[in-house]
Image 1: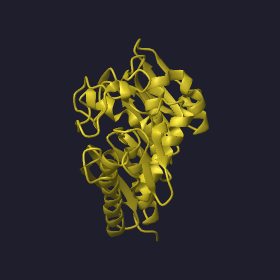
Image 2 (image 1 turned 90 degrees about the vertical axis):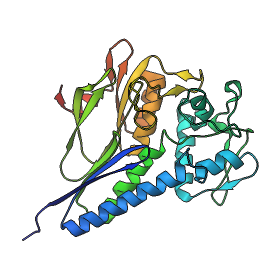
Image 3 (image 1 turned 180 degrees about the vertical axis):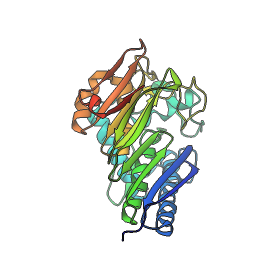
Image 4 (image 1 turned 90 degrees about the horizontal axis):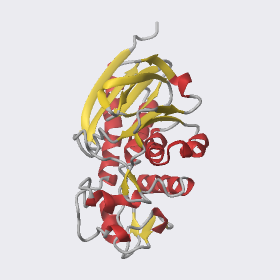
Length: 303
């Protein structure tokens, strides 16, 4: 007889939010060890890619990469590669080099040794990936923030750890950026960015990832409902036309990053969504709700 299903659910403060992991496996001991290993993987990403930690790869890059190439961890390099690819494919809408603008808005702490005046903000095109995991910045004083992509990467990394440790089904949720695997679909409620207490709809998620961005709530940066979370790199101003976006994609890193592109580009992000086999729902400032053609197939219950 097959052993009964066992569930383990735990939450820890990581990545500037609370990370919740629910997992099922053959035995409680195996599943609990797998969940601990998944949290350890997330903690590694936090340690490597935190903007706030001067000893992280991001901290060292922001201090030193304009002076000389900096060697980073393979995980950090992988996230940088994805970020630069998204920068190119989005025509510059996704840009990890907006850190100085976020500092000006009070969304990131200011370090005068690396911050630039807004008129001098560099773009991701000034980031050079070299051999042997080395990274250089070609514009003096530039700074990067991986907050728009690293959280999704951490969720993916945790899910892969769980899969490799004998877990049969799991969901990893980092402040609303989440991914699932297993035989059954999970019903995920999508909150209204105009009123976070209200659920717009729920989507059925199975072996996919989901991420949301909005102007009302961004737990990675602030608990203030009025916080501005997404910046248009071209105007160096907060997004205005779209006030909330949710993306479903094969990986959480892609879903996490593309929400920012959708917030900035709206319907013009369709080619990028198609390239990554992703779907999106967006809430316009006017109150209109727009979605990609396949979104209705994901909806499991209207609110």
